[in-house]
Image 1 (tube, rainbow, N blue to C red):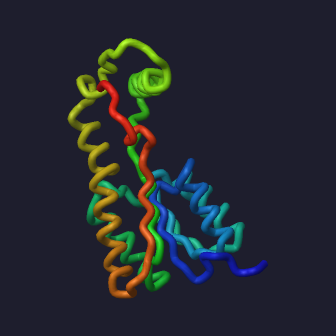
Image 2: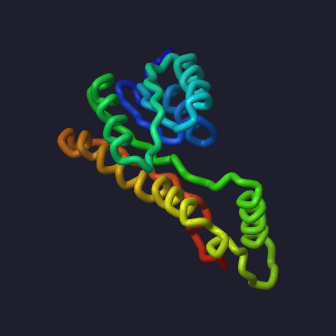
Length: 177
């Protein structure tokens, strides 16, 4: 197998247990990257680790809730201990409320955004608990900041690196909340 475009690079992918994060980790492995993958769901993360190592990549799988600054710093310390650096950061972790009520609201939101209907309140903000709001903000905003800051501690001195921030297409427009 010939070396890939990311051969010799260390990539850290947040939210790598399922979905897009797991897919990104597999793609980076196919391109020769060494990987640090994290997710709070260790069962899902183990599936990603197995897939990545099956592709021949060296992989460090860590449980990490990116809304916890100390956990983020510890994750980057473990990455440094194992690989010496981080060359690529993919901020993919995201909090999407998963209760049946939230799934129903999300489906209404998607229908509203894609179907011409009279404008109406979707009840997203008015029905969101303080706890869900703070957790959403912690993962989706603070987590991106804390991971970026930790990655820059490697990238700035080496004068190289890439940071990829994943966001929802919902950020491209305004909707009634």
